[in-house]
Image (cartoon, rainbow, N blue to C red; front, side, top):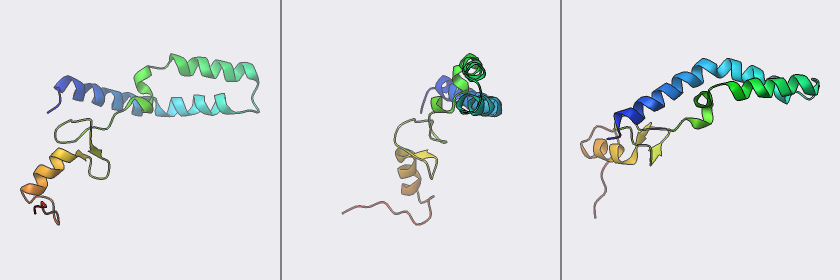
Length: 101
């Protein structure tokens, strides 16, 4: 189980990303538009830099929904390999059988 503080930090980052998504997209659009004057593009870059760092989507980290584990995360299932194996062993994942030989 991951520390609660780390899980809460990720939740906070997720909220910030959602909150600033529209503003960030608009500023990026201006900054990357070659037809705009250089000064306007530069001002957009400065405004983009003043936004909170945690509002950037690249700072998000995938975590297991059950345990909060950040490593060995399956995107399709939104859980870690360990949590998936435990659920599979108890028969809670349809069609999944623990292999043994």
